[in-house]
Image (cartoon, rainbow, N blue to C red; front, side, top):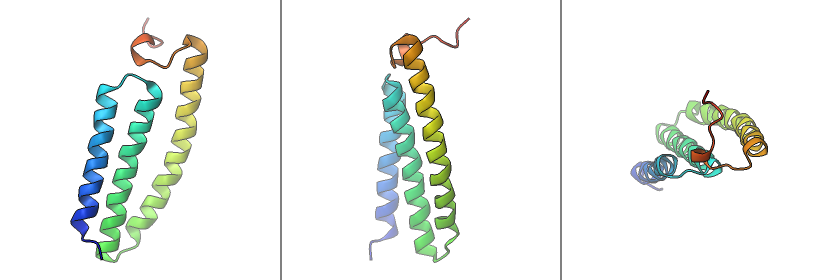
Length: 100
């Protein structure tokens, strides 16, 4: 059996990669993927704690979290496509849609 610390360490590494991607990159699609990576790292930690404690509540929570993430992905990609159609770019620095 793999120790709990390995799962939490992997989850922390994945979350850190996601945070670095959100803070440093300027492409909207890559930022979106980094947010999804952070969400999946939290799901991994929830599954690890659920398996360690023997309580299936964490696994059920992850199931609903994945369902919400799928809906969020559809809405997020629709926004990115609409942004690309209007501005012909997905670079965050070149988009000023929310400015007056």
